[in-house]
Length: 413
Image (cartoon, rainbow, N blue to C red; front, side, top):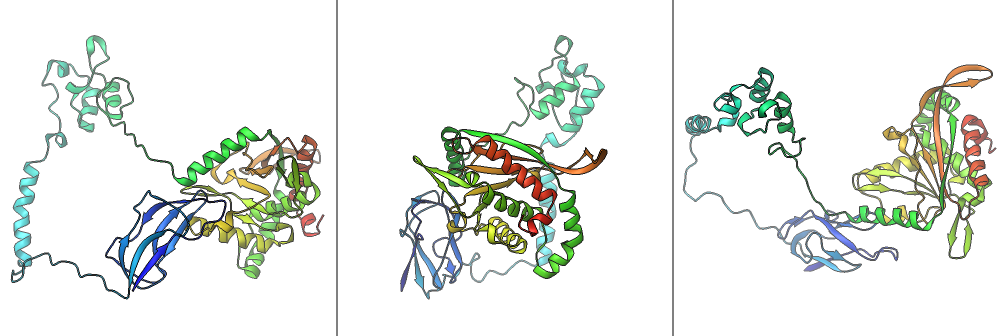
């Protein structure tokens, strides 16, 4: 019985999808729930599994084609078996003895050595007038890199080839030099990368964006992680990370500064009474922002567990469209890549984004004494149309106060 494989129902925000990769070809045996094809949308890569055991009889759309919800991608012949592979040798021929094959291979190897290109052998430098007076450094470099100096354009006195000319020829760094590899590759943008580009341009063109900065002393957070981290992991099965502190601090601050948790809809401002925080996660295909919902109601263990689950799903390409929908505020951590300071870009229709950065020990003044402390710059980019500078600064100060006194978060202060 023939069974159709269809494109999943796509949400209203996603009009179509592109066929990224077929993992099977026509005639292959497939198993129930085995992934057949990856579909790339503007937001996520969807896997389309087989719903029966059988043989992939027909593929309707090739890689790169654009498809819409419920279109038929392929036909599976349920319960069929794949055709056996064709026999490579003629019947009745005996296989050669193992020793014979080895004996025959040796003369071939010898002939292959004899036919090796001369470029793999030491160069006979000095065969032309151009290389007759080659300096010792240039001669040694040419022989080491397998370069014929006669092919190199000299820049020395009277056109002499210098060591630098040999090096530049090999690397292709000099304009006008004929040799050296200068590879280029042109590849089309993925759907996700195109969508990221569109969203960034939309943000730049539609939002009056401004960024405010502050710095946080994370010594008490680090002390708490050191003191309680092992017990926390034993009790909850998850490590106590920095993101849990920042997400919880942001959720609390959003409740006290509702303008930062708002969004623009036409001529209206929507104030969200909940903190659905998007956590930026970097993947091979681009940045994705799965959403932690109602973070103001979550405990540290729930936050860390949800972040860990999303990170794994993102790495494995298992994020669903529902995981990425919504979000009233975003946190991004450029510090994992070493960023010391940046101005993150707001993700519309959200109105603000918090940027975390690298933790660096710096000298600060504390109680009249100069001490070394683990410091982090934090940045808040926001839509100045609805968020005043005062609101943004107070939000950052709130984040700073909570992180520098983490027990306040535990007491809801």
